[in-house]
Amino acid sequence: MPYSDPRAPQATLDAIVSAIVVAPNASTRALASRILTSYGLPAAQLLQQRGSRIVFLLRGQRYTERSPKLRELAPHLDTWPSPPAGLFVVEERTVYLRTRSALALGHEVGHAIDCALGAGAYRSNDDQALRAMFFSATRFVTPYAATAPDEFFAEALRAWGEFNDARSPWPTVNRARLKDVQPGLYEYVEQLFAREIPEALARAQAEGDAPANVTLVGQPIAAMPDVPRQR
Image (cartoon, rainbow, N blue to C red; front, side, top):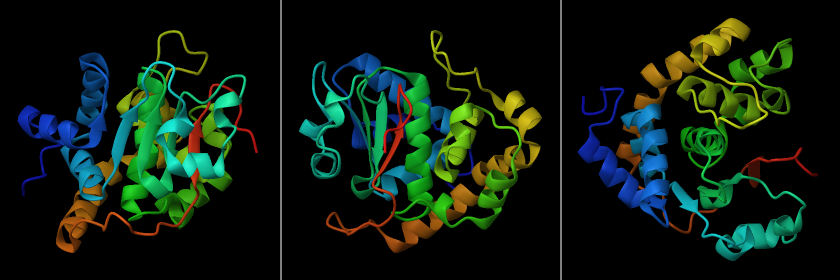
């Protein structure tokens, strides 16, 4: 099958990056390419098929300048003392990044994959196996993973991709840490990439592209903030 290789052939990956990434320069485009390559071709294709995008803000640009939904839902977001490094807006199926951070982008693309698996809403909201692991957990791969099932999912994917920043106060994550801290979650993510994402891609391809004006449901914003999430 065309999506059986877990690593994206470069030409195919480049085409996906060109289609879904809005980047101001080559370095940010290369960062997006690295993250998508690490998550694998089926995941990248699923994101494209479900209409997902990755948008890097220009220097000094505000989130609310780029996102109509953020202007509506969080008009004061950019005035926070430390605005989020990245955001995923479910209704727009779009990752927004104000930093050039592998940690933030890897996490937010994890949310985008969650949304793509749910065809417009976080699958983690309704995944009983995942939620059972979250609510029964006594150890977490990072403190942020303990805040909600969607963050539990996104941080598990970030650990799988081993996306870290050298100067971040967040714990370094990798597959070995994920397997040690939560072996059941490790197996869940392993099956996600080996079987469930390719199956979801096949379904999405059979259904065709979602209309551009589709009304989406689910949580409006999922963020990986520099400070604790504000309610």
